Image (cartoon, rainbow, N blue to C red; front, side):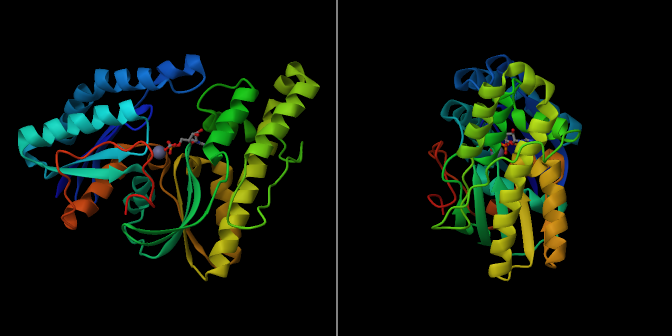
Amino acid sequence: MKILGIETSCDETSIAVLDDKSVLVNLVSSQSIHHQYGGVVPEVASREHMRILENLVTEALVKSGINLTDIDGVAVTRGPGLMGALLVGLSFAKGLAYATGKTLLAVNHVEGHIMANFLDHPELEYPFLCLLVSGGHSQIIMVNDFHDYTILGRSIDDAAGEAFDKAARILNLGYPGGPIVDRLAQTGNPEFVHFPRANIKDNPMNFSFSGLKTALLYLVRQKGGDWAEKHKNDLCASFQEAIVEVLVKNVIETAVRRECRQLVLAGGVAANSRLRTRISEIALQYGISVYFPSLEYCTDNAAMIARTGRELFIRQLFSSSSISAVPNLTLENDF
Ligand code: KG4
Ligand code: ZN
């Protein structure tokens, strides 16, 4: 079975071709145009998707050696994401599916991030506990089965990726902040500043990262820009340590309490080197197996959308051409 995957929910235009469980090609074009604005400008993102989408599909087909006629289904993100950006991908996919008589498979992007793990770990079996950490989400999810999720904990304010991006903005490091903070932190001292670690009383599986960001902001204001510039590696390492420590503590405690032996990371922040190291170290102490996607499948990509589309195809969960884009789609309001 061959699935063409299309992802345009934010600022990455991505096309993938999946042959059964193997990724033949996964092209990701990141829109660097947003860097000058320090964040994603929705209208600009839509226009960029429109500009390159068709060529990227052609390139993906040529590189994979697959003809459109060989494709069984067209999988596309329908949400969550930026409305205009989603509409570009979804409208394109609808047109392509209609013109070629192929099946349309509308994918929940969050489910796509979780399913990315099956690209690298086909042996992974349900149920498992997932720490989903991206620019828009920080959740602890019990993945009972495909389309069957129990959200156990979530961030009550900023998502983990958002916190990384805001810290980078405070430190004038550029966008997206997560990968830059990760890189600078590698030569910084994680004990330079002890940033606050929030404990949420009514649900120990919840997170809060906005106090952490405010603590960094006030510190930089108090000490001044020159000081922050001089100590940016130490500040990145200390900030990253606070986020990673809380993420790892909450998810490991949840796994132990629920006697769950498999832990899975998903989302852009799953690319964080310190998070990958710490979660592996701590999980080992408790005899818990940890899985994370390879780096290219952590951040937004179409391979994870195609992989989810494959599951939809197998279950005959086909979409009609009247399906709409849903910017605030979640795991709870979808299934
Ligand atoms: O999953 P993703 O590509 O998009 C969303 O669905 O949100 O995640 C993007 C987020 C951004 O906030 C980015 O800064 C963060 O993931 N990110 C990282 C790293 N790579 C990407 N955060 C920390 N460390 C990284 N290495
Ligand atoms: Zn994403």
